[in-house]
Amino acid sequence: FEGCDSNTNTDLIIAPVYKECVTTSNCSGERIFLEGAWQSQAGVYTDNLFSIYGCDSTVVTTLSILPTDLINTNVSICGGDSIFLQGAWQDQPGVYTDVLSNTNGCDSTIITSLSVSIPAVSLSLDTTVCINQGPITLFGATPAGGSWSGTGVSGNLFDPQAAGAGSFVITYSYTDSIGCINTASDTVVVDL
Image 1 (cartoon, rainbow, N blue to C red):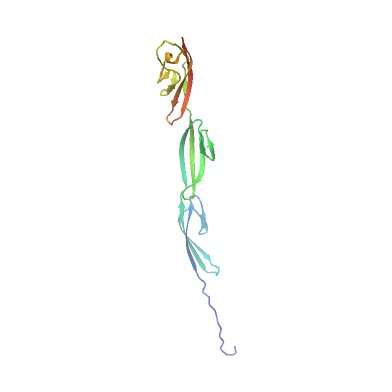
Image 2 (cartoon, rainbow, N blue to C red):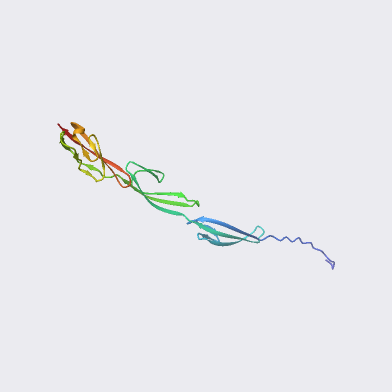
């Protein structure tokens, strides 16, 4: 004023500019909001924001994408058995889907095609033999390759003398390629 010197004191505050580097990861198929859009691809994304002081603040995000797993599997079980699929014990053929977490914490989808094996076994003996007759070869069983059991049976032979007089149940057992077993039975009559 009026030609006199005047002093003004100014406190100048320099607000900081921030730059932050972030590394993050998402599971395949997930998205994250970066650079003004939803991102689902691996890469480096830069976001320019304003700090609380109104200054530029930069966030550089390195995004990696972790894999999810899709596993298709075929499983066979024997009739009467069960397997834990889709949250319950299953004993019927079908396709079952389970979603679990893999080692990265991402979804792991397991699709299981379940088959149930019960070997078709048949036996048709219904025969009468004399007690003094020698051992007879057992017959009438399918599929081939099974085993015989019962009174008077040794291997695939039936010995009427060893069995004695009467009616005897003969059993044929067959085991398929995955270890499932089924049986069929019939009778042999030993007559005096």
